[in-house]
Length: 193
Image (cartoon, rainbow, N blue to C red; front, side, top):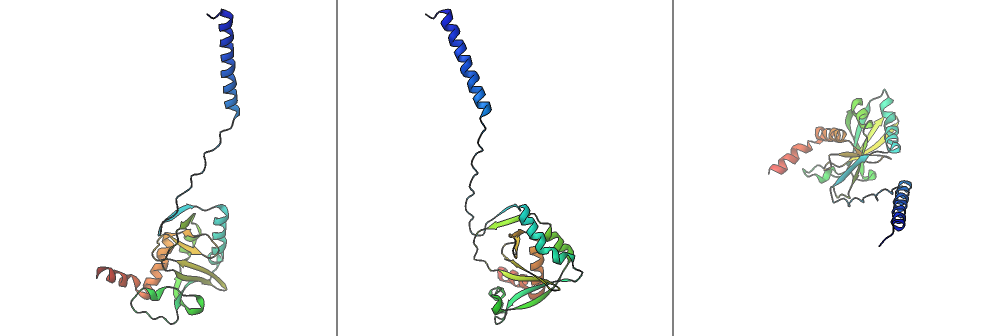
């Protein structure tokens, strides 16, 4: 049997232990859970994430000369010198610059460039075997390379910037190509045959 003094000592010891464990828990900072690693991207997949401040600044700096100029901004496309339009799509893949010739597709409205400069998401995409079209924005002495993959509607690559999620600008580039080469009509015809 326990004596009253022994029981009292046990209660006091229990209270001290509980108090010490609560104090220890209050003083200990919780470690954040480890960042979950994202699975690798499959072919044709993409992830979107907000641009960092430096990435956003780089995009705005790259486009700044084209937004401030009173001269029009022309869109040029790098076409193959020797490859003729044979009704297939391989002819329109942009070659290396030494094998290509620049074709003027028209003038880009300032509002579309402004909208591109205001984009806030970047694109991370898997390796792709799709073809790329090379473009160049030109205004006065300023040049800026832009590339786009027709199979990926969500973004464009702008020289020295992260790939930008810019679906509207991508559509605009495709509209210029359609106007010049009627690619979409031929694509629709191929799909329906």
